[in-house]
Amino acid sequence: EMQLVESGGTLIQPGGSLTLSCAASGFNVSNTYMSWVRQAPGKGLEWVSVIYRGGATYYADSVKGRFTISRDNSKNTVSLQMNSLRAEDTALYYCARVMATSSYYFDLWGQGTVVTVSS
Amino acid sequence: SYVLTQPPSLSVALGQTATITCGGDDIETKTVHWYQQKPGQAPVRVVYADGDRPSGMPERLSGSNSGDTATLTISRVEAGDEADYYCQVWDSRSDFVFGTGTKVTVL
Image (cartoon, rainbow over all chains, first blue to last red; front, side, top):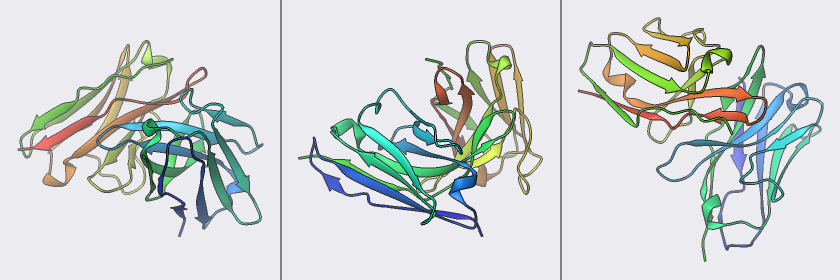
């Protein structure tokens, strides 16, 4: 069974750094595109970052320069390094697999990990 | 950046039809995907590529895309359809874009 399990979310002070991890099973992250999507409390979905099969990475303007997505093929994991965290980064962070056909969409989601940025 | 606008809420009687719109500039030139999210759960893809359904998704859910509006239609609404629904496109300048979301309430 294909599955994504996120971890690493916690309460952290503004300005701090945190790394989220997404463990994949049932498929290889090296063969696909992987993404992070977040959802602030009571709000809608917001795309955060994507890493393409070839290793190219892209970010939402709201996190560009602060967040870094990476992939560890040997561990079959995807990570999100978050620096200079702000209160507005508080959200449930989902890891999602991207299906690339004629367009791009999310076909597999984890259950998410909660990041709270507060003093 | 590309913007997708959805009505914040929609109420529909049991057994009736729910029509959820997703507005975007010339959205018909893009491919639209739809997700359902129930409270406390991760989103689930319900329609992709404008109108295709994932395996196991009931035929009651259908999608279309024309002009500046994409539409998710839920026929014969059931209590289990009560959820938030999001449209999504990929845009070459904005990458992945989600709609603002629509909360569907079943009466």
